[in-house]
Image 1: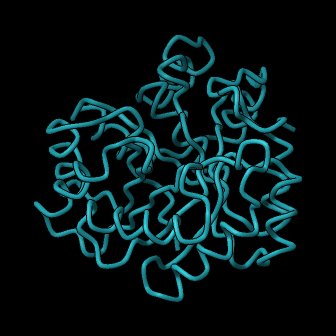
Image 2: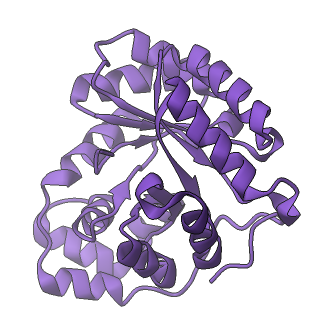
Length: 263
């Protein structure tokens, strides 16, 4: 299954990312998240190759210029080569196909074939609304959709979608957990952090984990990589959780022009 905590690699590239991946694995990270669109799979692969990473769960995402059946298979073969893996642990549909240009069902069928061929072990979706999830479930069944990776942080809690995922037995993978650093400026989070002698970023990660989400924070700094990892040991009180729940203001950060109509 998906490890609850991992390292995100959005907007990271080059030797710095390679070194960070190696350091993360050596620290004990068991999950690395990347994507074809990040153009950093090869950097991630080099980092994985520099350490013992056989037990590290690797997620990548198929970009919408490769959603047709054979394109999915070909692109995943390329991803596997770049990641230096014989088999990718999980592949996601990165975004719904803009204007339904390629039917979701075709892409899902291709992912199922990639799994059958041994290219991937699991598949899932990302940035899917409730309606899109229901359509995917109708086609392949909820048991075959391991996760829906969506934006979740204290200021954008995406409650309708997270609740729908819970009801359908689909794990939520929360991206942008620290809201591009905005959490460190929040008085409530800083106060909770002070009570636990930790940072606001650590509090946010702990909140996501206690919610049952998979958390994949990204960073360019080794000390943050380490502090993010330590957040797994933080135990927030019921009042802490309630106070953070109260910070929701539907503040979406990632909203490209090709995004679906959000719930």
